[in-house]
Amino acid sequence: MLPPPALPPSRRSPLRRVGCGLLLVIWFAVLLLPCALIVLAVQQEIVISQGSAPGQQTRLWLISEADERGFGLSTSTVTQTSDNALCVETDVRFLLWTGQAEPLSYCECYVRAGADAAWSLTSSTSAEC
Image 1 (cartoon, rainbow, N blue to C red):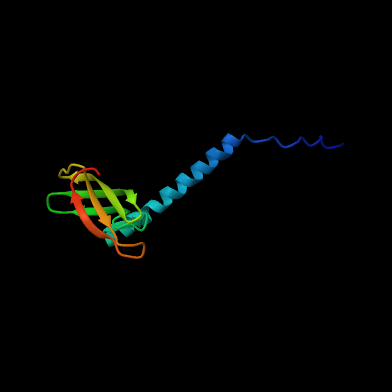
Image 2 (image 1 turned 180 degrees about the horizontal axis):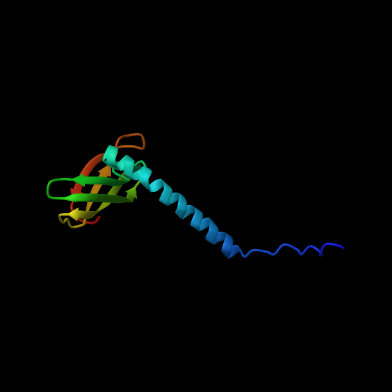
């Protein structure tokens, strides 16, 4: 008796492959979450630099005050007015389980003498740039 003829392999949809890839990325993020929380508990903050401008970074920190407990998150955007002048707008948000704090924004403007010189602060305001 002869075996039945082999059927050609069925093609899987590209959407199914994208879904599996997305699920894999989410799974790795879930696995790495305890590592991030341990680093945050030990160092009290996680800072990710976004560029060479002063204060251009994303920062997550742990708030452990008597009246407030939770997390703080600050993100910054740069507005460059010229090669030697720029403003950094920082937005700060809070996730507190004890206490209350309002989100805030502030703007810091910097200038420098030349491309190789250091940035120096010219103004700082507690508003958007």
